[in-house]
Amino acid sequence: MLKAIGLMSGTSLDGVDVALIETDGERIGTFGPTSYRAYSDCERVLLRQALADAVSVIERDARPGALMDAELLVTRAHAEAIENFLKAHNLSRDAIDVVGFHGQTVLHRPDQKLTVQIGDGHALAKALGLPVVFDLRAADVAAGGQGAPLVPVYHRALVRLLNSTGPAMVVNIGGVANITYIDGETLIACDTGPGNAPLDDFMLRRTGEAVDRDGRTAARGRADQDWIARALSRPFFTTPPPKSLDRNDFAALSVEGMSTEDGAATLTAFTAASIAMIAPTLPKLPANWIVVGGGASNPTLMRMLGQRVAPASMIRGTDLGWSGDAVEAQAFAYMAVRSLKGLPLTFPGTTGVTAPLTGGVLAKP
Ligand SMILES: Nc1ncnc2c1ncn2[C@@H]1O[C@H](COP(=O)(O)OP(=O)(O)OP(=O)(O)O)[C@@H](O)[C@H]1O
Ligand SMILES: CC(=O)N[C@H]1[C@@H]2OC[C@@H](O2)[C@@H](O)[C@@H]1O[C@H](C)C(=O)O
Image 1 (tube, rainbow, N blue to C red):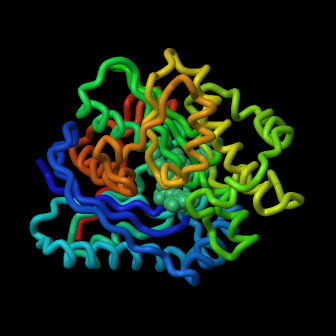
Image 2 (cartoon, rainbow, N blue to C red):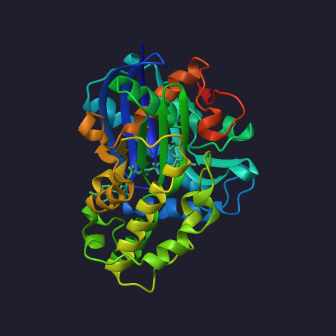
């Protein structure tokens, strides 16, 4: 078993999740500690600017506008996150075999064979004095895959630990939402549509804080069902898996004419409805949907999703003893070890790549 630290800076732009696990790349041995390094408001402004400037990028190494500064910030924030993590948990650097570094996605256009994650893996390896596996999406996209979601291979390892029977379903609600369906050897995954990102962006514009804390605002509003039906008529939602999204693919869907409460309710209901729309494309309907990611902490979203997927029940990953916030960081630790061993990260059922494929680039300190 190797000791691996995973790092994830997701599309919510909230901060860097850190997690330690022990794994041989197949089984999860032990779950170690987790932690989080939030971005400051200033840092978030720079990251949002980087997302805006990334729209013109046509080559994955190009760093126009704010991207150069944002990349320095991402590398520095991740180095800081690990240094603090090692100190807080009294971990010696020598005990760590590898770091899995996702970076920050600023653009995702798999149809153009382009996915851009900023963050310098070589600089991080040097700064930390540890081997770093990074660029985990690039090989899949180059081979014609969607390049996302990557986490399903780890969801499968988590589900195997449950020893459950019948199909299992994991729903991750981050900035974008995605699902993994596991039934024996069958592994199906895709992005389903928006997660928290449209709601976060709307709340930021209306209140100055990029979250509807505990879904309180949405709970007071009325969802506009006509707006939702129009939004769901986009071809993406009836396209079967595999499929993936850029964080801002739904940015043009505006609820600006609505009150803050109704806008929040509408966007929350849109996320719930779009996740539920995946059900008819799956071979069987799983009895339980296990929800992970920040969206699981939003009771209004969980209630709306529960109504949409009934009679299936909703279970929080945390109810099963899974980490609340760090499943993705654990997944990148797991994938770093798989990458070292040349094991596949992506599969025809998860990204549409033609054959199981490994990925990641190793940077030595
Ligand atoms: N208490 C809460 N109430 C409402 N929403 C919450 C709460 N806690 C977290 N969230 C939502 O979860 C988001 C963070 O989710 P998460 O950490 O899974 O995102 P991420 O790692 O950026 O995602 P991904 O990479 O999967 O897109 C926040 O931006 C917020 O919208
Ligand atoms: C391109 C990109 O960074 N996509 C993210 C995003 O956030 C959630 C969803 O969209 C998922 O496809 C992916 O992240 C997770 C970690 C994944 O690849 O599994």
